[in-house]
Image (cartoon, rainbow, N blue to C red):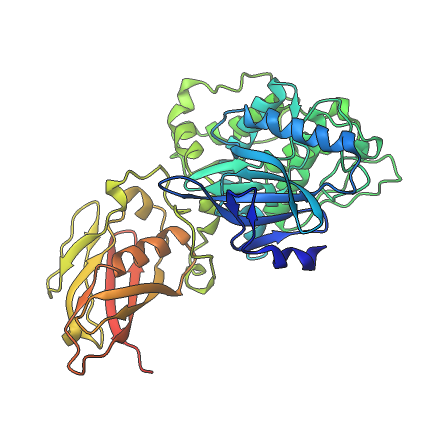
Amino acid sequence: MTEAWNQWQGQVINGEFRLQKYLGGSEQSAVFLTELPGQNPQPAAIKLIPAGTSNPSNVELQLSRWRLAMGLSHPHLIRLLHMGRCQLGSIDLLFVVMECAEENLAQILPERPLTSAETSDTLKPTLEALAYLHGKGLVHGHLKPANIMAIGDQLKLSSDGLSRAGESSLDSEKRSVYDPPEKASSVISPASDIWSLGMTLSEVLTQRLPSWNQKEQTDPVLPENLPAPFSDIVRGCLRRDPQSRWKIADITARLFLSSAQPAAALPQKRATVSPQTGPAKRRFVLPAVVAVFVLTAIFIGLKLFRHQPEGQQENSSVRAEQNQGPEEPHPASASDLKPSPVKSSPASSRSETRAVTTNRGSAEKDVVQQVLPDVPQKARDTIHGTIRVRVRVHVDPSGDVAGAELESAGPSSYFARQAVQAAQGWKFTPSTRDVGRDFILSFDFKNTETTASATQSTP
């Protein structure tokens, strides 16, 4: 059915939700971009599942699980907004409308593994969301990189596949590499999520999954290059016996010990420690001695995956539609995101926290006004080297920018968005031939300054 999903683009579900861009899917489901109805339409995602051939009791069970998920509220869970049944042509479908994620972890891993610091910053909100679900007697059931998502500067887990602990799995016949051994029995539990978490952690750190034989009663063999403390955590998660797997409190305690030593270290400096003799029993709320560290880490979100080691920034591709960036450690206010108009001038304006300069390009004589992104220093502090973004602007005969699009996004969707936003405010000399022109604007972001230049694009 995968090839057939595309034909439904443009169709309207129940008179409310137009199927816009096809985002992806499988034989069992498809996800489209849509909009929430209202005076100010907001983007959303809509997932379709065939219902015509399903057991009626399974259909009602799926709808009841979506209703349950719609009643949940947690900052690290995707919100479900609408659900129901519909028909496209002769196909009976179930649908659920949810928040639209901007990217997921599975899109990052083909490019590179995460660093230990990035993994730690990802694991904390993941553990919070799982602790919330398990505390309500629920199981995520589908934890894997594709279901670890980013909306703005928030990391969120998918929530359209939740179920109650002890219930039978609706897709027990379909085995994933992230599924625990007990998935064959169709019964799911919080321990199932722990196994999936261990598999996911191994993959995000090494781009490899542990190897194991389902027929043998041995634990999986971990990749050799798993760093501490994650080697301990993954080993504790991937025990074949569900009863002996680590709990969320155990994982949190091990992660806390690593991040809390040495006590004077900055949040970005995470020291490794020798393994514990046994899982420590600590509350999930961490002591005040590391409160600053925890608050910094919790607000980073998935977009930090686009932050790459020095020397790699300019060679990676990234999707351009993201709203918030990986390098921004805290949520930006509306004022943080507004571009700052800067008239062209040979002089540079520098300060201790943010320096902004403008470079001259080959189209210097054509530029009347430059607009540079007003990037918060907390976002600049995460830059190593230079992040370069190139934007193509379409200039009308009067010299105003009529449109802007990414020519080269660079490694960060956040800075790419800032560059496009700023480019729309540039002004050029009027055309002497009363025709439109294209210019390439090059923005170089560093931890102390932003530079910009313009070059006219030749047809």
